[in-house]
Length: 149
Image (cartoon, rainbow, N blue to C red; front, side):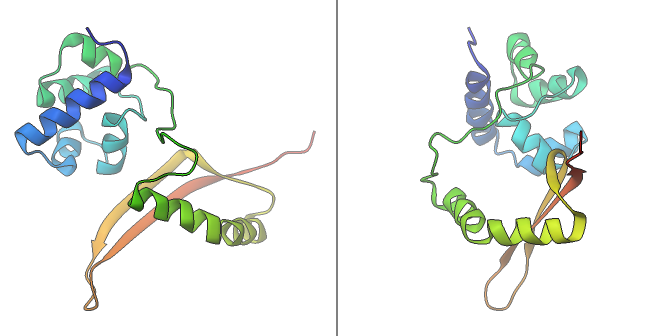
């Protein structure tokens, strides 16, 4: 019996390792970006019935697990306020150091508002560099201005 979305995530990760799948392969089968599909398989996004069915077939999931993939999850997966995983901590560090700069420059360019994480896309690529390969991350979110009322 599956009692939560976390149970489905564990099943997916176990079977991903067992089958030797890459997230890009899963994304190609689903027809969405590797970033969105990975987030969904890790329990942070919702899939429609067709997408969930494809994922269910790839990972040999039960109908119950496929149904869980179609339920809106509780978003925000970090187990602690300050992350302890070194890679995730670096993102926390980036926001801690550059967050005010990002905020200032967005406000200067767009005005008072926020960058949406709902109307959003992300692209993660390897960038060759003779001094050591780099991680190239592009985040693109719709600007949403605050309104006066």
